Amino acid sequence: MYIDGNWVETGSTFDVFNPANGEKIGEVADGDASDARLAIEAASKAFATWSTTTAYERYEKLHRAYELMMEEQSSLAELMTREQGKPLKAAMNEVKYAADFLLWFAEEAKRLYGETIPSARSDQRFLVMKQAIGVVAAITPWNYPVSMITRKVAPALAAGCTIVLKPAEATPLCAMAVFRILERAGFPAGVLNLVTCDSPAAIGEEFCSNSVVKKLTFTGSTAVGQKLSQAAAPQLKRVSMELGGHAPFIVFDDADPVHAAKGAALVKFLNTGQACISPNRIFVQRSILEPFLETLQFRISKMKAGDGMQEGVAIGPLVNQQAIDKVDNQVRDAMDKGASLHCGGERLSKGELDKGFFYSPTLLSEVNSRMLIYREETFGPVAPVIVFDTQEEVLAMANDTHYGLAAYVYTRDISRALRMFEGLQFGIIGINDINPTSAAAPFGGMKESGLGREGAREGIDEYLETKLAGISI
Ligand code: NAD
Image 1: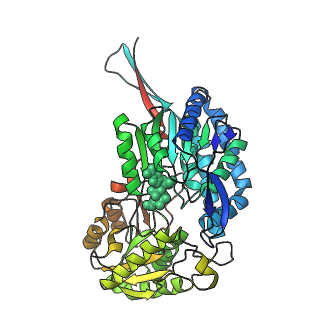
Image 2: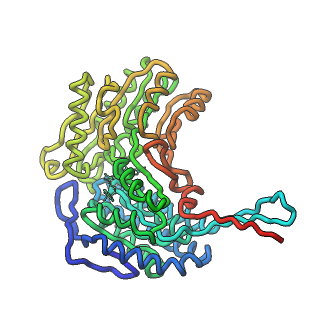
Image 3: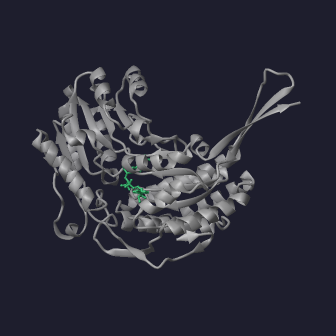
């Protein structure tokens, strides 16, 4: 763990495994609430000076961290593929995306503008300024084990906050590698701290109940996000929540079904479906169902599963056995209730694949609202297709979920695109576009997909207080 500028160990450790072959790849300190407390104290001490540095000093360190991360792009990507399983090319892309947050928020540090507001009194002036909120506690998931860290750490540090991070237990090695880079960038002791552990509940409890922590930022499942929000409520602690999703992917019959199916194949199977913005219900207008399914099935049939270090692999392993069971349960349930299986639908266990958590890329059609997959986040390589007839019908179906993170629409009709953009109750909408994400664009969900936004101009606001001075002159 990295606490107060030192790499420290505890008595106990836990093992980290490669999900593609079950091999042990590391051993990491198993911290507890007392380690989290030490890290919070260190962050509190460091806040006194870090929060008074100039924006230009903070810019310089974050910019240096960006350069170092790009220098380490290949080694960090290789570690990510071994620890998390995604294909090496996707891991390279993630490191670039992660580094982009360091660069974006290095620049944003210099734009923490305040404002003056006209008063109704001639002898009064209003002055508004932004100030760092204080010590931040952050919890991140395993599916994007580098970028989910920089998406929190970069804006927090740019704002002048100090931070304690607890990464996911499946991917602590990536977190340690990120912190080594940040250490080399020259941040003073205590400004950033890393606490690793195997069982997160006690540290989560410390983050929520310790009054020194002024802000909790979490990315993970909705169930855990709700629990942490409740635990943080007695102190009215500020929270940001980036939670689960259940993205609709809607294809109207004025769109090119082949182009749309290529897009669906790319975004659905990205990271083996383990993405919060992964399409979870693919709605296709009746008259183009056939060519759409044909292209999607063809694309899926060409996807090769395996160790992400191997050339040509598109489908990496799932994170663990529970993930395989959840995906398989949704597929069985859908088939029991009348879905048609076009391909996949089973765990892959031939040869080397048996040592990892591989599930075959799967295509289901005739999916309906009685099926688990229609409501539950899948987080796996299953494309469920649902047919629809009208725009009103598909809008109602798409919005019929507690989630509200990402949605996708394919149409060539500009009026329809705008009406869908306005009507969909989701925070991120791709219109004929499967990658509506960037460090410069606000990322976040509505409804039970979360609170707050990450990235963009909004991303730094999450770490700032607005302060008003009313001045009599
Ligand atoms: P998870 O909620 O199980 O775990 C996420 C993090 O929370 C991990 O660090 C874990 O150790 C920690 N955690 C778990 N229980 C905790 C507790 N009781 N107290 C404190 N911390 C606890 O989720 P996951 O399976 O790791 O990640 C997948 C989920 O994350 C999916 O639902 C996905 O949609 C979501 N996600 C959302 C975004 C987004 O930006 N909205 C991005 C990536 C992932």
